[in-house]
Length: 377
Image (cartoon, one colour):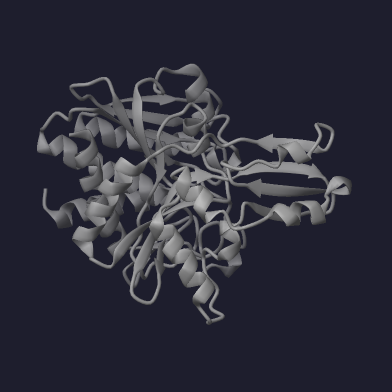
């Protein structure tokens, strides 16, 4: 299959997925899972659809390798709600192609990645070479609502979590241009959330221990020198332009003060628990340990260099939650990386006018395909 043909296939899959309403309260992920199942059946890929809760369908598609050890290509089928429909330039529940862009809810998060993974799976099947490692596409429901009815259920009730060597998932890949370098975020972990009672929020005590923890992050392999270089750029940059990742993202704590409670997002390699009592803590969401992913990160960096010598990975711990925590809590190596073209805006994720460019689709497919080949074959 030619490059253009595979790009067209990915775009067609994405448009079809966008046209299926799987917003988080629609309870309709099964329709999207069945669509992917049909695509897998056409390619002769073994797959199983699970629907433990009505409408909450998830799909696992498998290309068997010589080994039982597997790598997981993860995506989720549900999306955020449309939010303010009238503010969209195009209908969010229908794919619209305009100026080399595909608009619609889920174009990036996460139907874009689902479509790219389908392109990767299709290419591997058509190449006709059995991989060394088994490759599994896991496309799940319920991520936007916490994942309990999707990946959480699969984790507790199936054997698909056995023998996993690596998960390639969402959570990174956003381009961050600086003066002479373009960094691409790579999610190596997620912050833990500790929600405490508002009356017990001691701002002075917590502010006193809140500091930039770049060196600590490098030591545990959450960051690398590129991360430190990017932080130096942020500190030295005199412009007022808002950065997608700003300096506060490198502090060990981020505060979200609400009326009744304060949520504290802490780096997974630091802890404020000793400063709090059990009565003060309303909720503690853990995200799993930081692992040494250096070997995999080197593969990603090597492939990025082939596109542009100015491209660098930016290992990063993200502030929000994703399904990645289900893998990390089991000690499974997990990387969040869905690379986008440098000109692809990302403000539409969970907002309005979400879109992905054709350039992003082509770039992401080519890069992720090479990464999968390097790891699985």
